[in-house]
Image (tube, rainbow, N blue to C red; front, side, top):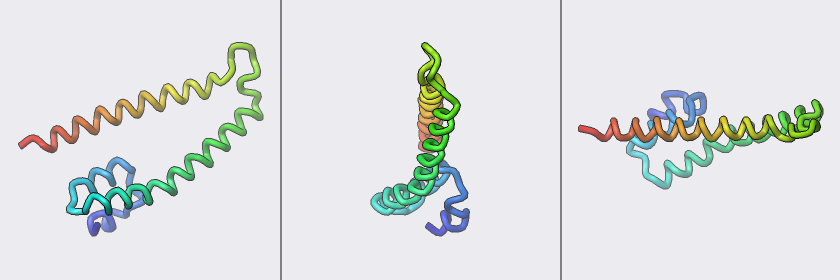
Length: 101
């Protein structure tokens, strides 16, 4: 945990914090609890931002044209899936590289 505190904790991206803590001598229950608690503020901010974006899209009339319903939402979902798959691939590659002698 001193490394996490020294690096500023919440100012770092999730992936970097998780990797740093995963390779540190922190126990698994503490690591999982810290990850959960650390993700809550950012998750709440994302939910609020998403709700605001949804309200803005509704105010702009997104989805009112025939065949246009939810186009922005579907595009965002596709981009999120692609980004998640890319991050997962990168994480697996980094872990394999780190585990090689």
